[in-house]
Length: 234
Image 1 (cartoon, one colour):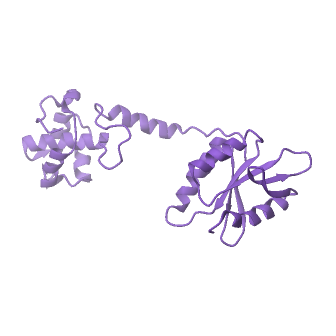
Image 2: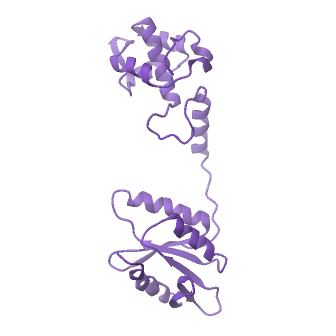
């Protein structure tokens, strides 16, 4: 769809099927509908999701609680994610969401109304575990996910640093020296390609591991278990 007015007929048909009288461009409103003495329904039409669209819809809530936004149904690789994220936004703001398909059908994804998302204890616990495991504050808030130092990466760096100093070492000895309880499993998994198994239970640092120690930020001073770790560039 190339014009906002192409969204109007499907939206009007949808509302009329529910017994509403529908009119377009009433004052500053794109679509307004009435059904008897009920509060009016307002629909704002746009060709895509945008912050301006949400601002406009929120402003209409000073007129009625029954405010929808209507957009063409997103297409492409990220369409499902885009729709899911904006649906969550609509629910949090108490807005309704309508999408219009290429064949002219209109779909209601949510109606206006108060919404309180359910808290996920599982997700909260996972985030708290990561917070507790993360030593110091190695990442700037707002940084992109590329280059983020996670607790897992910190554990890998501790193991790598020990191998850089001690040479090939048994996994349980690495765990004891670094405080990384699952050092053997971590090196066996070798997610970053930093470790190489040279004998049963014995690992050494790879060339990639040496590069990892040079290029990944890590504050050794803030980890009390790593007082003897080599002085790596932060």
